[in-house]
Length: 584
Image (cartoon, rainbow, N blue to C red; front, side, top):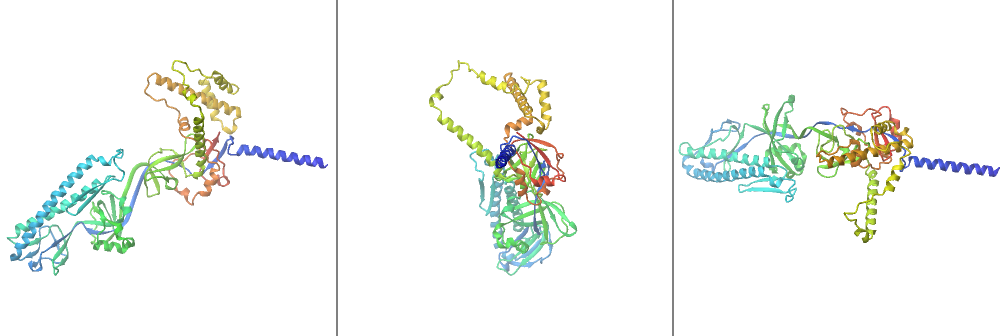
């Protein structure tokens, strides 16, 4: 009885071990048994319109503030205006004493001569910048002698510096130089008029249409400010924000009440930190960052192209700058993109042959809806998925490293005598006929075809249309044999075409091209790890309007094997899924 019980126990253990070992072989990492996996988070990309905006508060300011100084208080005979008066260009503001005009004329003459020299210098600078802009030799990315961050500095002896970056800021530099030149011309016009009128009716005249803002009558050098009637919007940005803005960027200014707005563009992007002014002090009142570190802020001006509503100077407004725009490009969710360099990164997509492959792409910018806009790398209807754990790709890299090291070791161990034994050109190379016959006979039992003809193509199509789970081992071997025949035939046709002098390259099917270029990766237990690492709300980032694959659509994946997770099975039935067929 005891012997019988012992034999039953031993038999049960052997059977259990046998079953367990077979289950391990069937579903382990090295298993060749096809498996089915369902993935709920994916996106079929398509071209779309993308924008990126920068929004900030600003203040309505005059386009220009003109300050005029007198030499001494007793040179003034009469103030003809008061604060708040509207004036036009050429109007007299202050009458001067005739007996004190000689000194004033000498001062104006000296100022005129200095401004004329300054005008010549700025004109030369504008010509130089326009010439360099056309050549742009140092700004070419494929010139080895040029550094990526090289800057060219143009210094003027009139306390104006223009910094030209290699990324194309010539327009900004030329605009600032031309603005300075226009200001000099206006000052010269006023001085010429004052010098000519000094003998008739000596007076200080207004160079612009505007409003008298402030009179400083009792200072050592009396002066007055005239605000031009043309308005702009001033805002202040940090260094990082400054880099994303360019001169000419389209902008929209919102005035708040009744959704009034005006269109404009960036007219000034200051190259030096914001100077102390009443405008900057007012801005610091509602932007605490500027108060903590004022040197990190730069002034940006928006010139209005449409008529703004009637608002006073100093009114707080909202500025919306379109920093980036593309009418047609492909974008992916930002969390699905791994940035490796400034404009390069990696995403993961599903190939037409069903492989999960990392793909290096070039990016342009991140849009307002948190999508990375790509310059190239993806095309319409490509399928992308969230980033998988990097460790799932480590095994493939380790295998490649081991193979490379093993190959190097074999090469080093080979005798030098073998390297010298090279067959002469006259001797024909004899192929191993026995190996060829054995290879051919390997599939003799699984297929009746020896070449890829129409009947073989029809047979291959039938085998490929059947679910791999339903194929027998002999059917799978026959399908692999026919696919090899097909590939060999296409390669032979390509060689014949090249021998005949054809310039056209032989085209291979998209699936086989994908198999040749992209190697499969080991993503064992992919879904289980993926589900645990997904962040809440990630599925909401999927483009609802994107083309989606039909539920249950099959995509063939050749290695690795993906184990379905319990969470996926439980949630199946109320979500859209891509169904992946994993094949050996």
